[in-house]
Image (cartoon, rainbow, N blue to C red; front, side):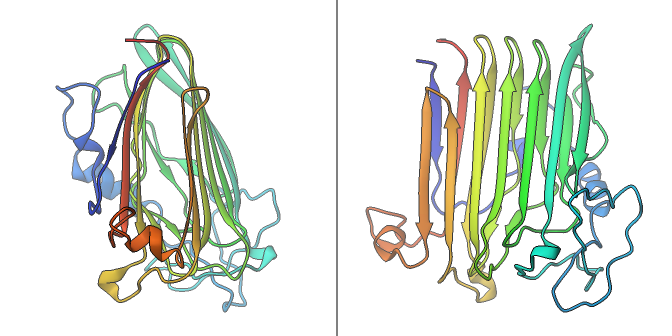
Length: 287
């Protein structure tokens, strides 16, 4: 069985991709890169209260599903919970990484409001950094976001996000995010998104699946924070499904409900801590 290293970090609220790396000599990402990424994704929210559709540029308005966003609070980039079927986002992103003469090249195709920013090579041409962005600013009931990544032999990619993934309140429908990555022999992946925030009243599912061929390596983390207690918004209603899988090796699947007090507050459970973090390293063969 391929080895897995995992770590549970109660009470930890935020980590940064620079804190975990495959190479001890990797330079820390500059703040300017992350700030530029944030600046590229603000101003495309929607709520159910705005009667006028937002005027998006043709490059950002490629929605084959017939969705109609609405605009409010563009300067803040905030979306409210809404389960109106005509306003849900269905986004799909395909990423394909190849290796050519020591350089990792990337091809991306998207449908709907899910995409990557430009390719970055802060460590040199061997490692491609990609920042995943979702311009609407959050995930509400009825939304479904899918990421498919394929890494050919010898390629090396690092995937992260410019900010937290936010699951907002739902009126009943489930909000879904699904990530699937397939690594060929000799490929390396670093899956390092920022934290996931589960807002009060959300109904959310987060599925992660990584398929590693012999000789492939990956490291990743997943960070979940329940509610916004510092803002006076505890997670006192809602449910969240977490699914982490390496087929045939490791499966972690749990449904967390706000009314499950034994799990959330028992000393044998979360002991009142509202944050859960998992860190792992995996290979496609025995070390």
